[in-house]
Image 1 (tube, rainbow, N blue to C red):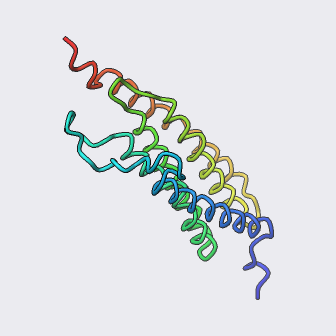
Image 2 (tube, one colour):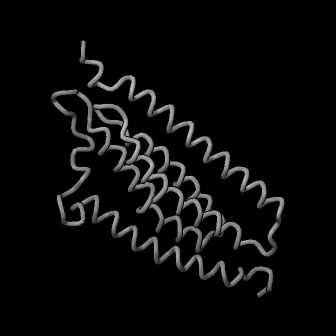
Length: 186
């Protein structure tokens, strides 16, 4: 076997860590979706039910369902993909982190305006760690660190953060101006 084909030890350990973490988050995510971890029942049981009073499905439940599917549940398949197809799983994790961030931003809408705390928790506690794991896998998977590639990656991460911030503010402003509670007032 060629010495160039063996990935670095740190990369192999990180892949193992992500597989273990993915297994834990997969089981936790499925348990949370099915039974709310045994506390209050499923938090997304009405995600696709149309509410009689508004004629719309429960917006928060619908988008939180997609946050959990694209985030904690998708981490295990992405980790296994990275194990067998290096860099492909990391790229899938980056896409999953972006989907989680967008679904988290959308989940902040409610009938009284925009509850930005929910969106910021999702972006900060789910999307950001997945993105950092993916970038770490990409960086450790190469033999030599190419500083030009690292600087481009840092620039793209900053661009993504600015884009998410702009998207968050646009969504917040829109729903604060157009929430159903304000629309029904004379």
